[in-house]
Length: 267
Image 1 (cartoon, rainbow, N blue to C red):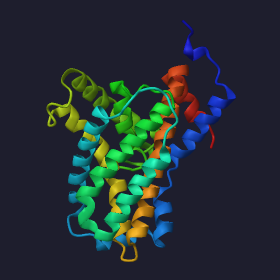
Image 2 (image 1 turned 180 degrees about the vertical axis):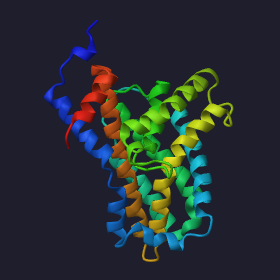
Image 3 (image 1 turned 120 degrees about the vertical axis):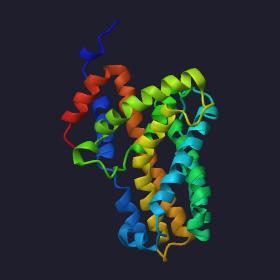
């Protein structure tokens, strides 16, 4: 058996890793949304009801659990094929336009729907990068993508990078994988699942809150709501593509070698 740590990175693989690092370390969702609405996202926070952070947290937990169920049971065939990024963007644009027309009350319905579509798109991208989406570890890696691009309030700058987030989630992912392999999703309140969902939600909810605040700005209607959802989906598609490029290279070169090379790359 070839020792993967002795292989030299090909130019193509090194280029892929550099592109992945650029996206994973410098996500630009907030800036892009601010450009759409014509002002900083912070301007929308004053339009949100009191205790809105708690509401977002509750809905986010529900959305992630529903998304996990969706990804566990409806991922489809595992054969590698090109991802349909445009289709998933179209679906969330429609839900965003409808939600923008109705207002903030639509969050409890729109967020679980859009989360399921995002996870479907993430799985589609994972499959296109050669990963077997029938494997539990790949399905949980899809869920893991939702933790990228948003910082927990307890994070400092050193704890918000790609590898740090993966390290923080590693134990929860491992425990959840062991539990799901044995029992499936029969006990939704099981501690391993609760810990994993909470770890991901602490970061995902940051992005959700910013998206919701942008939609709360009075000038944002159905059209802009759809545009914001487009950017939201595009963000996680970029995170997914980059994450599964890294994991594809890990299978070829080994995780330690890829991490070391990633950290050495100047972007």
